[in-house]
Image 1 (cartoon, rainbow, N blue to C red):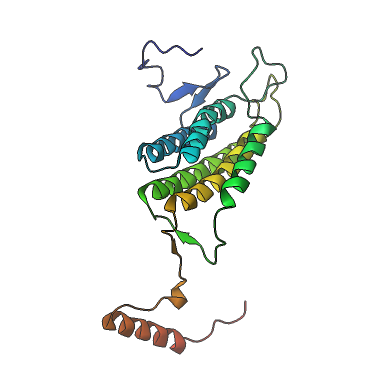
Image 2 (cartoon, one colour):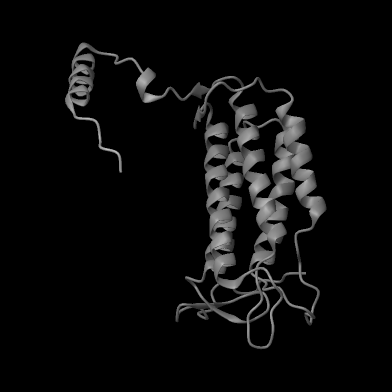
Length: 225
């Protein structure tokens, strides 16, 4: 059980924090960056839930994910150890498998895409798109931590690495959030139109585009390197 009796501790005023194994780390450490982004993603999911615009099955799924994101944060903040003093909280394969099952289930009701989607649609959908991007950042931060600490168990001289299952969870979660954002949009999606295909909406814009196209046509082709 977690008991919080006082929120401020002053322990981090020197720019350091303690990981789950009680070792000290800089607040700019890539591990801290990764689980901090996970916390941010969890908060954005909470914002999506607070819109009140999500279907009951989606809301139930996201609340379960919110709980598991605390597990992900705990995993990322706990260096891998061969014989830990206490059993650490780790993401397991079944958690990743469940995300994939949710992806398949929710995606069944969606039409195929012919282009990328501009984030938006509805307030709930836009917020889930934001959550997706934060999860992607958390995944990148976790891989940055892997570049520093690796994925092996620690020794007396070398700190332990990062659990790749925790990173796999983030990868699948970003996919699921994209799918849930599409479901939440309820058909109110705007597809990306590449620049070459976008038609200027005003006469001034058309003239400007014509000038740009003409200038590009006058430029000499680049020489082969």
